[in-house]
Image (cartoon, rainbow, N blue to C red):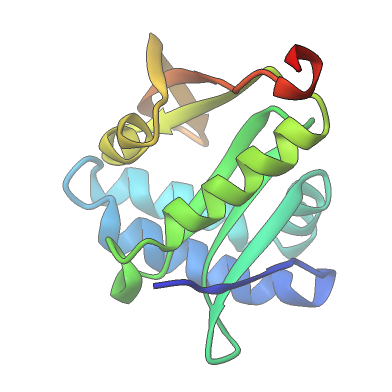
Length: 163
C-alpha cells in the first residue's frame, strides 16, 4: 500500500506528538518498562521543546485519508531522529515508505550514509531496511536510560559519474 507523503508544518507538531506517544506506548511495550515509555513519550508534552526538536529536522508525514498515520524525521541529511507509526498501522509499510523517502532525499543532497540510534523494539525494522549494527549505546531520557543500537546504512553511490 502507498501512503501520501508530505513535509510536516509547525501546525502538525501537536498531532505528531500524540502519534509519537501512542507509538511508544503500544509498540515499545515489549522492549521497555512502563516508566521508560512514560518518560520517553513525555518528550512531546513540552510543546516548545517538541516543536524545537522537529523544527531542527526534515520531517515527513505519511497520511491515509488526510490523517497522519506515521512520521519520520532526519537531521543534517544523515541522522534519522524519529520513525513512528500509529499502532493501528504497524507492519503495513508506513515506516518503510517514510524511511525510503528520507533515504532518497539524503542521497539527492549528497549524503553517503544514514545513521540511527535504534531503540531495541526498532532493531528488526532497521535491519530489514539494510542498516547494520555498529555499537551498543543508550539514550538518556530524564532519569531513565533506554538501551539502543547505533546503526548505519551506506547509501548507493551516484551512478551518473560512472557513465
